Amino acid sequence: MYEATVSAPVNIACIKYWGKRDTKLILPTNSSLSVTLDQDHLRSTTTSRADESFEKGDRLWLNGKEETIKQGGRLGVCISELRGWRKIEEDKDSSLPKLSQWPLRIASYNNFPTAAGLASSASGLAALVASLAKLFQLPQNASQLSIIARQGSGSACRSLFGGYVAWREGTEKDGSDSLAEQIESETHWPEIHALICVVSDAKKGTSSTSGMQRTVETSTLLKERLNLVPSRMNDISQAIRSKNFEKFAILTMKDSNSFHSVCLDTFPPIFYLNDVSKSIIQVIEELNRSSGKIIAAYTFDAGPNAVIYSLQENIGKVIGAIKKFFPTEEDNQVDPFNTKPEELPVDFNENVVRQGGWEKGAVKSLIHTKVGDGPRTLSKEESLLNDQGEPK
Ligand code: DP6
Image (cartoon, rainbow, N blue to C red; front, side, top):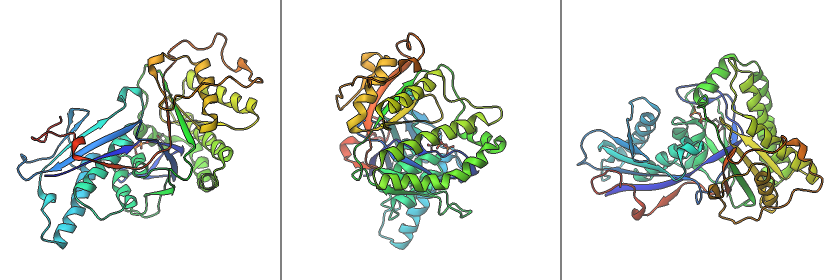
C-alpha cells in the first residue's frame, strides 16, 4: 500500500505576514518570523494514499467532512505541484510505481476545535504537503516544500519547520525564493513557553485573506510598516540566536501593535482586537512594568485571541495574572506542565483592569504550550483512512 501519515504544528508569528504582492502565488509584501508550537498539544494530522484501483478523481476529508478540491484552487495547486515533482522522479527512474497517475485519498484531522478560533490552515496545509511529499518520496527539502505550502496558505510555509522560522519574502516573480528557513531549532531555546488565551467573540471577523488585500489597497500606514520590517527581522533573529528574551518580547509586542494599527488604517477599518484583547495587553504591560523587566510578550493574529510568550521560569506569573483577571471554567484549561499560578508582583497596579474585573468566560479557555518541532512522520497504525480509502 502506498500511504503516508504526517502531523504538523501550528505556528504563531512574532513578525507578522500581512499583505500580498501576488495573490495567486501568495507572495508576501514582507518577510515574517514565527515560533512553532508543540505538536504534543496542537497539531494537524494528514494521511495521503495513492491507489491505482481507486475510482477516478482525488478526494479529501477535513475532520471527517468531505471537501471539494477545486482545480486551480489552493488545495488543487498544492496537490498538482507535488504530483509534478513526483512525475519528474518517475521519468528519471522507470522502476518507480506511477503514483503521479493514481487517484489520491486524503484525510486530515485537527486535534483542536476549529471553533476555538485558532488558525488551522497553517498546520493543515503543512501536514497535507508533508504527507504527500512523504508518500511520493520526494527528494526536495523542507524549504523547497515550503514554496508549495505557501501557495496553500501563506503562513503554512512556516509550519514545515520546528523552532524559530523565517519566511523570506523573496524577489523572484515566480516565487522560487519566497520560502521558509529555520533560524534556530526548538532545542536551541526550549525555554520559550506560550499561553494561548481563547477570547470569546460572537461575530465572525474579516478573514486574513480578504483583510490583508483590503489593507494593501487602502492603507498608507502599510508603507511605513514595510520600511520597518527588514530591521525587525534582523533584530529578532539576533535576539533568538543570543536568547535575549527582553529584545525578543519588545519586538514581538511592537510588531503585533503595528499590524493591528495597519488594520485600523485600512478603509473600511478592520478591528481584530476587542475589549478583552486590549485588557490582556494592559495586564501584560503592567506585569512587565511591576516586575521591573520584560517577562512576557503578547501577540494577536487576525482575531481577538492572545498568545503570550514567556520563559518557562516566568510562565507561572503570566498564568497567575491572566487567571486572576480573566477567570475561565476549570475544564477549559489545558496545562500539560501543571504550572502553579503565581501571585502578582507587589507593585502591580490593579486599576489597569476595569472595576470588578471580567466576567467568567470572557477568556473562554487557556492552553499552555511551548516551542516544538517540525512535521513528524507517524506509523501505519495512526492512519486516518480505512481499507476502502475513506476516513476511519
Ligand atoms: C495575521 O496565512 O492565513 O496570522 O495566505 O491568505 O492564507 P493567506 O493568509 P494567512 O495569514 C496569516 C496572517 C497572520 C499573520 C501571520 O501568521 O504571519
